[in-house]
Image (cartoon, rainbow, N blue to C red; front, top):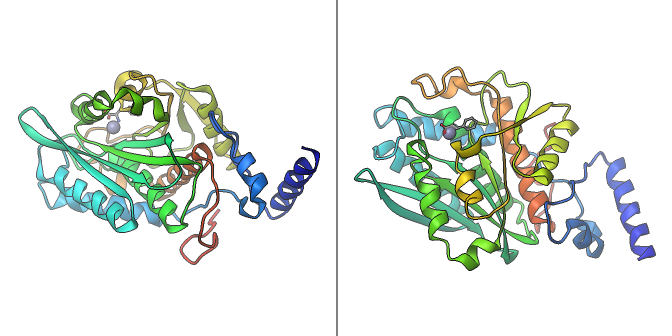
Length: 319
Ligand code: DPN
Ligand code: ZN
């Protein structure tokens, strides 16, 4: 035990002197610290991606609305175009992708589920976001912002060849705006053995509102709440606890006994309106939320190291 502590302390000191920030403790289960004792050369902070990476997804989802009558709502072709965009990116990056169909109000809807096929399948860390908009507009803050943040998180795991301790799963939900329809459909059909494998669910709904100065952190789970608070504090950003209760998809997972959390940006002047377009979002806000999602995924799943060089040309520490 003693020499290991010394080793960890040394690694921590080296990382600190290199300006790296250590991830805080995960919500439960094996600590990433124990993995890093075996492989200290892999100890590193989660990567940070440039704001432009998630913004590229928001632009594509804006285009999906523009090409389809200005909306990505359930039952409209702009929703299917959104599904095809997200699933296409995930398939190309090597995810196990399932497009799960359901019917609501007589119209077809779909959830997109993607597993990064590494890490313990009995311990699942789930990040989710609703992919539909209201009919009034393109839904770029609500919720291309969350959809793009977790899509970029998934693509970053693939880009660095992440080998986490736990299994990372991502979900894009349909028909949230009509009452959490897609996420409830998914959660309620999970066999009970599979439910207990999901160790945490983290929700991203409205995370890009321009002019955001402090972030809301869901008050549901204490340890995930401190993880997010510590992350934002390390960037000099304030947080406030928020209670979204039954108003977004984390509620579908809380209802089946999964520990849940999430983040949200500040006030949205175009909430559920036609003007919830690209200019309703701040690239710096979207980028910060995306990097918070990456931080959460790496921390909760147990980093385990990447198999590709961390500082490759496509990943930069921009802050
Ligand atoms: N985005 C809201 C909706 O889907 O209608 C719910 C919500 C409100 C989420 C406030 C986060 C913060
Ligand atoms: Zn929403």
